[in-house]
Length: 87
Image 1 (tube, one colour):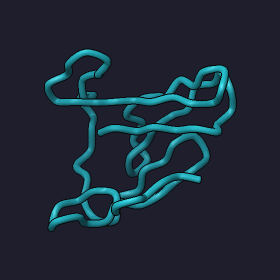
Image 2 (spheres, helix red, strand yellow):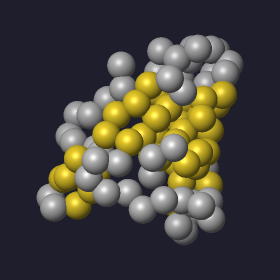
Image 3 (spheres, one colour):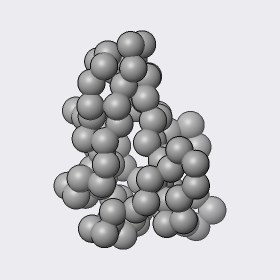
């Protein structure tokens, strides 16, 4: 799971939730930008998936701070629709 934000509150921490389960936090910098990458096989700059990471399906809700959206399908698999962005 990769989450990127821009234009958020500067120097803040935003909870990232999937279907009400908090899976991590995005820390923003002095410009209000930040990112979070969760992986089942984490590499550099990635964090491991938490033990309580939920199954994502079409219709699952992702919330970052006070913004939210839903996952659709892409190529028959759950995922954000192309161009899906929080604004």
